[in-house]
Image (cartoon, rainbow, N blue to C red; front, side):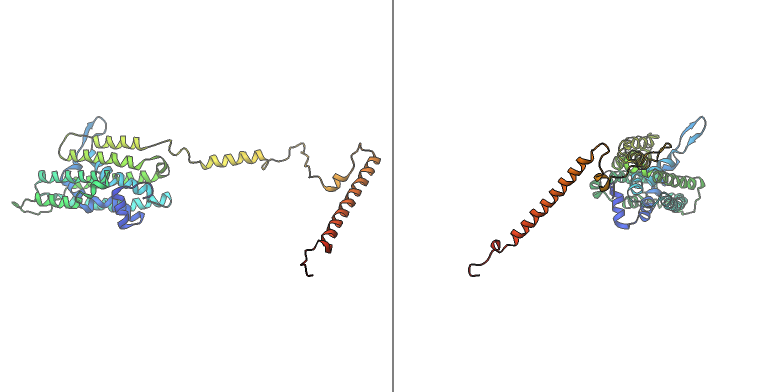
Length: 344
């Protein structure tokens, strides 16, 4: 990639190509690999923080899943390093991908309760945490990711291990609240990608993507702990905030010249050289370069006799130079100086 060798984004770039396809694949990968349904079944979206005095309880699970699963360092790497075009073109692409992502997340959340009726959830939660740890390891290091199974394999193994056929009743169960939470997490990930695209001209020169990638891996590890019902609270979000702070380098883009500053400098240089200077109101005298006639004219204070003697001396010197040149040409053309063979 252009500015970051993100392991997951690089592998997908080689597979699909194109900035829009790459972004869609990166953001929709949790839906395709079964990571998002596993998080829905494990109850990751239902975690809340609070209640707070004014806003009440905050669905912190929605924000965490949106930023870490649909957003994350892979999305940042694609938006900053691979997406071309104008700012509005990038925004339209992200909105299009976000719309498809939101619909897919809502659909999988609608199916998840029906699937949960034939699963042992406390067993499946362990596999869901394991798949998040695997994603964190793949994000941190491509070498470690080569030795780990694919997320889809882990999710499939979790479905088999937690399958409960003692009461196989696949009745459709609709949970409207869960559908809204799933759609909200997709919207949170899309908003994160939009914010990154809008700030891309500043972030490209001032953000260390690899540093943000390692922080995202740590936050994913904490998210796995929260799935296992460990009291981590909002620690994943705090890690993301601190990581973004340390990955931002405000002095990194100081060497990039500003267009307005360059234009102002050009105006100052032009004014100094006289390019934009106009004659004064009193009238600046425009001095023409001296001609040959003006050089030959005598000075006002020079006597006429001295002028005549000077001109006569100049004419005599010119005639002497011409005579010397003529004599030199004659000597060069004389037969005595011509190289001849001995028999000629």
